[in-house]
Length: 465
Image (cartoon, rainbow, N blue to C red; front, side, top):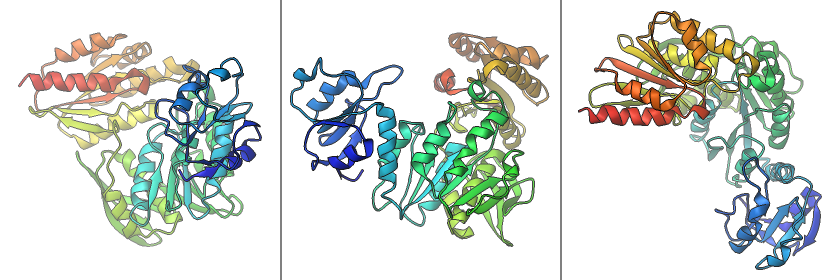
C-alpha cells in the first residue's frame, strides 16, 4: 500500500476524529494486531469469532499510529501505552470498504477487472493474471480474500506501478455483490457462470443470477462486460448502454470460441478463435471445465486489447491453484486428485467428467464430502448427484457427511461406502487394495476438509512400499 495522510482517512470515513495529528503519514492498513506493522492504521473489526476492539492495546503496542473503532473504548483508554490517533465510526467494516473505494479511485491508470460466478472464479482469475502479467505488472487477490473484509484488504495492496489488477468477488449474502462491485468499480466485469452455489441464501439459480449480475451495473461507463453465451442465464444479457461487450462460448456462437479440444491427464489442448484468427493453446490443467475457465480469461484479455499470441503465452505459463485438480502420483502409480477447495452439484459433476475423460482405462474411485450451503433442497441435490454417479463408469464411491447419505441412497448397485465420520472414511480407504490402475478423486465443500484425508491417504499408500 502507498502511504497516505491521516486527514484523508478522516475525510473519507466521516467519522468522529477524537485525537491525533491530521497530517500524520500512515504507511498502511491492518485489521490484525498479530501482524500489524509500525506506522499502520488499525481497524478494529468485529467478526463472528473475534472482536478487534479487544486487541487495540496490542496493536498500539506494536506501533499502530491510528485506530478506527466503533465500540465504546472509554473504559480502557487510560491503559493505552501511548495515545494513537483515534477515529470513531459507526461500523468499521463499512469504514474499511469506504476507504478501499477511495484508495481504488487513485488508480485510474490501472485496469481493474472484477470476476464473480458460481464456479471457476479463482482459476479464471489466476489464468487472466498470468496473461496480463506478460504485458505489465499484474496483481490478483489471493485465497478467499474476496468478501467485505478481504476485498478492501486486497485493494490496499495496489501500488502506482500496478498496471492490471484482477479481483475475485465472492458472495453468500443478499446485496454483497452490489457492495463489493461498488467498492471496486471495475473497468471490466466477468461472470464465469450461473449454477448451484450458495442456495441456502439465494434459494434458486434465478436468485444466484439476480445477485451476480449486479456486478455488470458497477462496471465503469465505457468499460467492458464479458458474457458466457453457453450459460442460459448470462446469454440473456444482450445490451448494456455505453459498454463494450465480448461474448465467449464452446457450444454456441460467440465472439471468442474454441475448437478441437484434446484432453490429457497432464494438460488440455485446444484452438482459440477470435475474428477469423486462431492460435493453438496448451493449458497445464485437466478437464473441459478448465478450457471454459481459460476461454473466459482469454475473452477478458481480448476486451483489454491483448493479441491471441499474448493470450497463448499467458495461458501456457499458468499454474493451477492449490486444491484445484491438484495431483499426486504415488511410487506405485496410484493417482490421487485433490479438488476439495469447494463443491456444488455442477462442480462435482464437472470434476467427475474430467477424470473420466482424462484417465481412460483407470479405475476411477470417488471420495466425496457434503456440498454445503445448498439450503432446504440440499437432500434433493445430493440425491441427484447420486443418480448422476450411478450412470458413470465408476469403480467405487466413498462418501462422508450428513447429507451424503442421500447420495448413497441414489447410487444403487455400485461399490459404495458411507459414513458421517472422517476417521471411519480414512479407515475404509486404508483397507482398499490398490494398484497402478487406481485413481482417487477427492471432492467436497471446503468445510469438509477432505484435503486432510487426501494427504493422510497419500502417506498411507507411500508407506506400503
